Image (cartoon, rainbow, N blue to C red):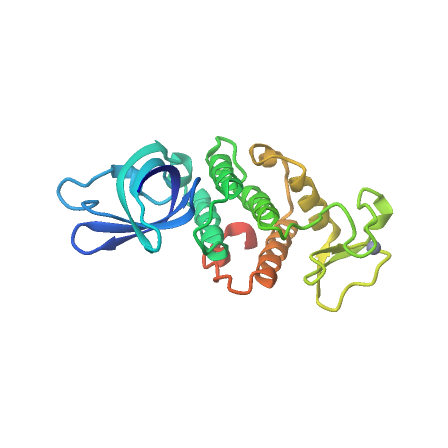
Length: 255
Ligand SMILES: [Zn+2]
């Protein structure tokens, strides 16, 4: 069956003399592995459409029950040049791709995930981007789309709204089993991780805003680092077969 779909390249590797094998996240079919014959050599096919992070309109010859599909056409729609050309942004771009690769395994259509990925790359590519905020926002959305969203606005135990100043005092704690933060009035869960109050407020703020607006929030290095730890540990604890995300230790969020 010939199918058409928009796709973003999550991974790319050389295969044989002239081919390339790509892992794509596609709008219509979720994650897919494809082979591109003639992608390399003297007259390489499809150019930048096969580069990591590129967004393209693709055509595939797709057979059910086959793990590797044959890509027959790819036309570049968008290349995120500011991300590719800036080492700081690029590391965050890698992390965005890698988190999706690590958490989503089977081939299953999930348009929301595709849109979240595209919006994150666009926000990273914006003139005034704040890459660490984009990643945090993306991970919040990713968790939500996978059905394991964090309620950043209420205590995970007693449901008190964090809007009330008194709900958060001194420090806060994030419970991995509870999948959320607890208020000042509730005892922290035994498996919880202590964070600054600013961390809860930051995640709540990010949750209420669109990817395109997150550059307006200035976060302390502590709150940014803790937010990433909370989100990464939350994903790991709910997705038992999640792969390690190797780009995380290299992010400047921890510097
Ligand atoms: Zn509470």
